Image (cartoon, rainbow, N blue to C red; front, side, top):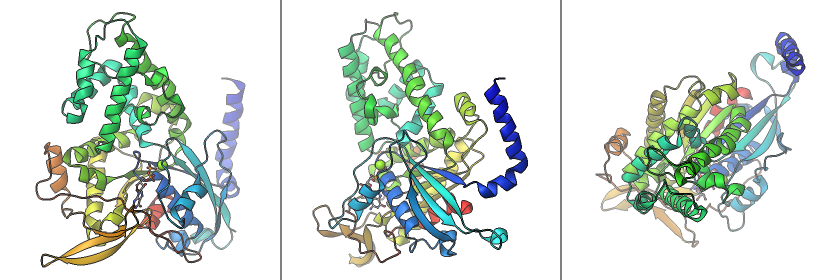
Length: 470
Ligand SMILES: Nc1nc2c(ncn2[C@@H]2O[C@H](COP(=O)(O)OP(=O)(O)O)[C@@H](O)[C@H]2O)c(=O)[nH]1
Ligand SMILES: [Mg+2]
């Protein structure tokens, strides 16, 4: 055992003994991971959450807030010097501008520290003063999380599975033809490798736009400063029996392994392993709108995501987590302001059914999970109109051109299995209904002092995620 280790153990031993004492002096830190596929609503969620934690007038369901125990909250320099800071001020300025607009999309990991001065409740309330609780919010792309499944796969396995999946998708045919036509056993030529990787990336982007969730390798969609580098220049190819040493196939295999060890593993080690609480934002309405195949894909992806939070499933992950685990995971369907409140229970029920099912399939145990429907920033008002002698519950919002429009998204079924069943059975479209989606601009805000932006159930989400630590 090296000396540092011994010293470490001794300090830890001492801490163990005096834990209850030092805990009262140390300032607790909660690391909240915020993830979801691109456009799921991470940036809007974090911006609105932070604003609503600073001005808590709209957070009655967050108990520490309604009990008046949060004396102050303020932004502080974050603990990680090498992570980009979440650009809270800029995103908030976009949402609260004279002509409000949605914030620009972000493409990598970022962090923000919000500190709250909180008075304890219950037993300690009488003889303990207020203390600081630090909330470190880490925003990272859900695409990166899905890469965890790659760690267990060889390039051949991954290629086979991916190509099987693509087989069933119209939008993938161009890539498939190209991959099949390729002489994978021939000598590597970089321009061909690049063309294949680009064609595959094009497919991934189209698939994301079409509402599909499953799109590994995640960094292909959000390459950041790795764009164009060899670790991102490969693509799935039909397996061949014995590939030559300098063949395209061998080189792609090598790059796939490099992607795993140089891109995937560092992310899990440096960011993922430190998270205490997690919210996974899901654009379920977008998937429903895209059709049964997208819903089925989302259902499968949720199990993959939960799998990442199950230590023990993955040898590498258990090793870096060393017994630490995420304590709570919330799956939140975002943009619920597209629905009249009478339909919210059905969206919630769908999220609950998918979460429960994903937990069963991933044989998930450990963290407490929950599901709800939220809108981080409410962009609509409700309106009931008469349509062919029937009452239609709509929402009204502002379109990009500045005009106001009423919108009826369709009737979500009471029973979520009316959606999940056909999705699983491979239906091509929904039988009874069509589900619309619309992009509203954020509403112009006139906030009263002490109030954050309007939302739907953001306070309940916050209570579930961090309420017990305040
Ligand atoms: N109506 C509505 N739209 C939202 C809400 N949150 C996100 N959006 C929409 O979803 C888009 C993507 O959100 P963003 O937070 O940038 O997603 P990210 O890529 O996960 O960070 C936004 O530009 C909005 O159009 C919400 O609460 N209500
Ligand atoms: Mg973002």
